[in-house]
Amino acid sequence: MAKITLEDVDYVAGLAHLTLNPETREAMARDLGSILEYIDQLERLDTSGVEPMMHVLDVTNVYREDTVGESLSQEDAFKNAPKTDGEYFLVPKILDGE
Amino acid sequence: MEYEPVIGLEVHVEINSRSKVFCACLNNFHSPPNSNVCPVCLGMPGVLPVLNVAMVDASMAVGLALNCTISRWSKMDRKHYFYPDLAKSYQISQYDLPLCHDGYLDIEVDGASKRVGITRAHMEEDTARNTHTIGGGISGVDFNRCGVPLLEIVTEPDIFSADEAFAYLTALKQILEYLNVSDCNMEEGSLRAEPNISVRPKGSTTLGVKTEVKNVASFSGVRKAIEFEIKRQVKALDSGEAVVQETRGWDADRGITVSQRVKESAHDYRYFPDPDLMPVVVDDAWEERIRQSLPELPQARKRRFREDLDLSEYDAGVVGMTKDLADYFDAAVVAGAPAKQAANWITGEILATLAERKSDITACKMKPEALASMIGLIGDGTISGTIAKELLPDLIESGGDPKAIVEERGLVQISDSAELEELAQAIIRDHPGPAQEFRDGNKKAIGFLVGQAMKATKGKGNPKLINQILTDALSQE
Ligand SMILES: [Zn+2]
Image (cartoon, rainbow over the protein chains, first blue to last red):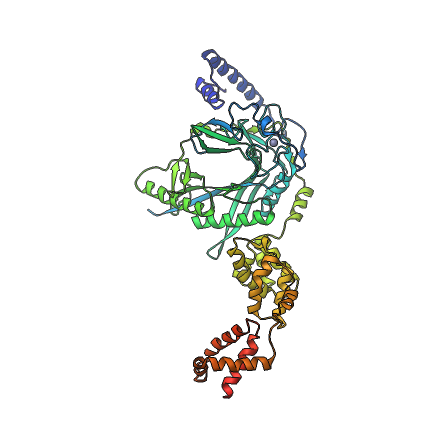
């Protein structure tokens, strides 16, 4: 049986940059746990003759031709930017490498 | 204890399609910052990325050139992480079903052939470029690079020395250039190589703990970084310390790698299939079309130059170095130039002249047909090799028909015996010393005298004939 601990919730929330209050934290553990339980149920099915579904849509090979279209003006590009110098989006200094 | 290194390489190649991989923005390194951006590559909510078919074609071409299996069915996935170079907080990449897998590249190291396994080559998007030179606790982000098509090529841990890594990278770059799928410019970041390195006791079959080295800006940098890492890890193990699995940055100025403290969870990417992008299904016909479009690849071409055209190993290597150079050589041969002579001119005077100008064969105005014609003029005695050498810089710079130029400038070789006999007498008179040496049995002294005669005719004398006449004159006395 899948069991989601509060530590699991904290870990996943951390990865998603989410801050959860104590009640939400508990609720998340419960909800995620029951979702995984449901998955466990599905896993009990015999799927040996079923092709795995790799993608939710039944459509393949959708492409665009390699042609250049119009981009935004710099003015428009920066419209939503919290901070810009007109050339770059400005963010707090990045310390790590990459 | 004796250790042996085990090395794998990850290479990121920016594909030189006209537009980006998921939007129609221009794919150009040199545009002003944030001028090739749109809602898709800026990661705005609600947009729909659509895969550029040129990326699939180019990736398949690379995969086939690297002897990979092309997946009949592959998909795009989201790789999640937070970083200012990625506005939508995930990079579109391929996770468990890459387009190309299980290939190999044969390389040559110290004259021996060696096979490096290619684990996979997968399609993804490049991320934005950060600049840290703005100051004031601020970094700038340029999204022109975000969404540039990127192919990641991953090797098996089949590489056992820094030299092998260097040879692999050189051979890979050559193939990419032959395929014309990338600029392969490491300084501009269109080719990036990240080695992962571990060491293990010699003879052991298990792998040691590996480190990955980033921020290496040249192939020689990769070589140095690997050499440094091997020494560092061996030293650590010898003194009883453990090697920590981590990412290290190459500090080219200090010649060392430095630990990049990254949270472990930062590598939990939570991949899942991107529902915005439809699976890539390649049938036999598509694969075959790409296979047919592949040019003759470097190894095959070099072999042909050696075996069919009888070039030396060295000449075949130099002439086949780049596709442009090999095309030039082939065209000269087709135009009638004897292969060996064409190779000699290309590997010698032509490349030297171009190198002096920090230029390459693409800037050479002398057409391959003109090279063939010039070699023909030497062959039929119209001009001497000396004159040809003199003509060459002009031909390379301005082009033109060698025959017309030779006639126009009056450079036709002097093969008039009477004129040359008169000259020979004058040379002997003016240089009694060397003349006497020759008479005394030093046959090499003739070289100096021939040189003087060539100088006197400004290179137009027929050197063979002059040699003959001088030898006759000195022997008859
Ligand atoms: Zn765009």
